[in-house]
Image 1: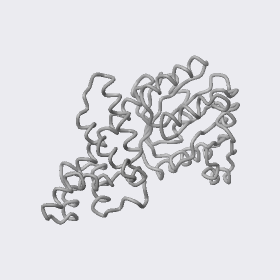
Image 2: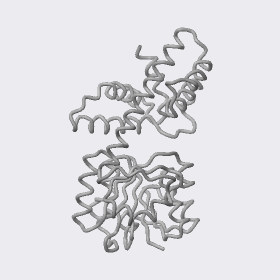
Image 3: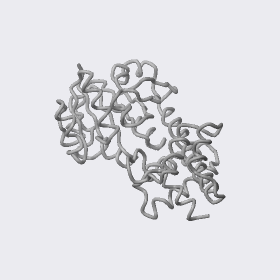
Image 4: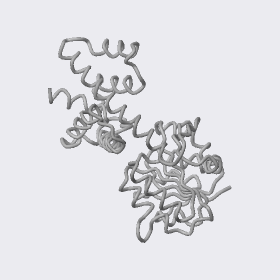
Length: 293
């Protein structure tokens, strides 16, 4: 049994922390809105009042937060950041959030300079998969560090894909999420075109699901676009899709790539958020496409 701190009690974080708790670890959880942690507190987790409190004495500390700013706040807060805590010797810091590559590399250096182990570990999956421990983890870490962390990570996932050194997990996650942004914008444009031409969109959606253009991303979003279901059961909002697209574009440019399609998709998501729909599902982009033709 180990002492684990977990920072971030969104739908994904709650499920992941619950898996660690169910695995027999002592888990302290922190969230800015403490009420979101209540289901885990009722199961035996300890509510921490600050990130530092959650990390105090911990053998491993996880974070699952929204963006660079939130990550910086929970790790580096001047008075209450997790890295100011008295962690166990050679503690493992496991950052599961989707962050910019620049911040991941900076944070990993800070962690390693402090004498701790850093695991770059963005994930793919949905809240139900976090609860069931069937996420896929995209890991960047030294092999020996990954081995040390495996007893924690294996509780969270059905597969660990090791991309090599720290930062490489984030490179892959931003790459595939940028691809997803382009796919979603593409299916929105295609459906808008089919609609204008008078095709039955339910038939179009069925045909898409049977053809070469189908992918889980395309099929899921085409179904929601056709149903006009943008406000309910939100799994991934337009705001977060824009954030990931911006980070992906920044990464591509860092390595000399010119992500033209990614930038077009990003412009559409920026319009979505600027017009007040950023908290709706990412599929709402079809209305942006329709209104800007």
